[in-house]
Length: 204
Image (cartoon, one colour):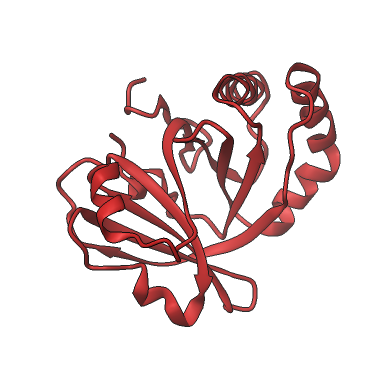
């Protein structure tokens, strides 16, 4: 399965993380596929470098991870186009809840195993000073990718695990997280050409 750093664009100035709560696996997949169709049909916005969609393992939600050259470029596109895109998705899958958008930057990645494929991604939010508690090392933890929110007070951490069992063995009930698999990925080259347009397995 795709590793997280395969999804990272080196020119990204901002990483946007947002969740859609759909309620069921069928609604999640329908919404995800509709978003993918929107991306494929539209001209790539100026400033958007990468866009990835993850499905939660419990089937109840989607996670979007987008990289843009800047927040300003994203806001320019969002003001002009986001409402139309969302309305078309909502016509297919009514009642999606959208808790909000986190504007972050990838602060650093902690690699424990760069060879083995990721079985799952786990995403958690913590105080920036507590990042070491989720970044490992731990059995089955392949890597942790630390994103800081504006002001550097909170961290959203993507961890890569060999499998769900490894994550279960090292996570206690006090830890809040969601687990995901990659559903689809778009990554643009510097000249606007597509470097990556794949499903979660890395297939074209």
